[in-house]
Length: 126
Image 1 (tube, rainbow, N blue to C red):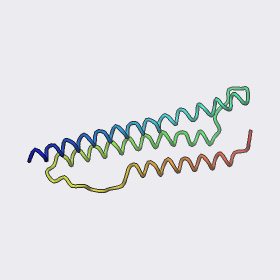
Image 2: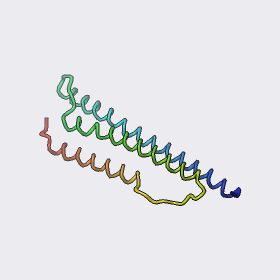
Image 3: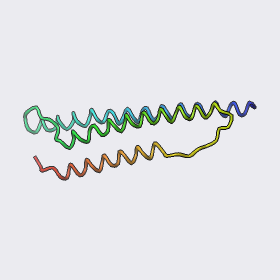
Image 4: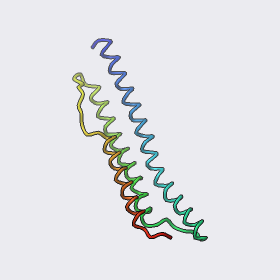
């Protein structure tokens, strides 16, 4: 193996590490939406009603969807990272295009947003 090959592998390994860190940040953001959305909506309802309110059913359904999306994306990102490192250790590293984790996560978050919009439009005003 030439020095150029070794340096290329090192650069690709470091790029894989950066990608995993980006996914960790993305997943933590999605997970934090679960906690934030529920608490903010509950606080808004409590201030309007004058009592300790609980978030509406729609929010209680949508909020955990962010948590599940974040956890699932994290598991897939870890698996993807391990597969990339395993391929880099081999002598026959080739690019293999597979399903995009970013696209899957974006579609899932979009579907959660559409469900939230549908629930918001379907709820009677307070």
